[in-house]
Image (cartoon, rainbow, N blue to C red):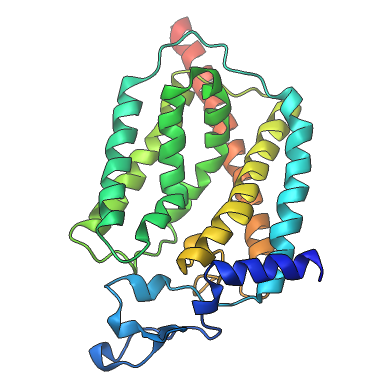
Length: 295
């Protein structure tokens, strides 16, 4: 028995035996629908709490294919991460932790937790979605001074995950009172966090290719390891399509068996663009500041 088979069997044991192999159709027939969302035992979608049907996991890929990616991707990215670590400096800034950022992070995370624990089964697992992870990163920048610069530098790459929500967003599982409204408020506030650190020069970015590539690769590596090695098993065990790690969202160009690898490549490109925009904004702000002082 190969290691791939062992890992695949483990994933099925985690909860994959209840996940069905066919896509769940969009809800159209209401209460009298006999669409199946889970098996072993059979669970009809109509018996789930509002919002659960929309995020129920299905086996878009085989357990063996997911096992291969779960083994190879984190190992490859882990090797890159080990090569980068000697070049990652600790924070050297004497600035005190930002109280506004800390309070904002705690408030937004607390509201999210309340919504998650009040919803359908295992909805709390959606705290691993990018916006919630970024609020956690934001909070950690105020709690771990030695890691602040590292976290913020990665945040400069990650912020594309917030920007893209304003272009493409999926709120189909948000059914609780004011949950959609808070979804938008949450993301708007999250946009301000990296700009607070950038425009105040608390965590500047260098106009240097090697520095650019270092932080970009660190962001890509940590994100890939987290979602392939941590979120994927969590998605299977909770039987939820967390961050679309088990099946692609509708209407996207990535819908083949390589959709997870294609999504990772798109994410890396997005991180590159996000960091490039951050460097440009910072350089423009520096030039504007110098001109203002001259006058």
